[in-house]
Length: 224
Image (spheres, rainbow, N blue to C red):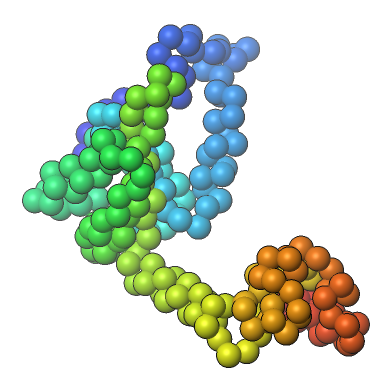
């Protein structure tokens, strides 16, 4: 399955001359390598489109989910003929690009095509990207497989229930053993508010047994 590719959009501004390295080849745009590394290191699949719908960014998680590499994706006009069925392409592209005219994020679910021909249902969050003049210049889109997203949302809902409505105390601590979240029951047990214990050493909150508690927590951290 193949499709012709349009020219990849440049990361330079419209009036900025292309830089050349000592060897006469175009030099890397400052920050471009850092941006690519940040995108590739994210757990979410990310892609971006310019104002004409041409793909400008495609990270490794997007490649993992759909099988198409960045080299194969960047520069293509939309998903038609490769990452989405031709019959669905206009509707999918229209809904994604509609984010340019809408503030905030828009959420959709689409069936996309893997490189191996399989289909995968994804949930997308899209938002417009503003240019230097403050006008919409494109769209970025984060997506994940729907079943994974549903599992995440269930975990978040369970966590919120534990922290808000549990009949026992729940305290979330960071690697330095400082509380980052305290539910209502725990706050009452500690004789403090929901926010006042945050970031404080455990020794300031636990009157007795702090050394045993810290030892137990360190053991859990060491065991992964």
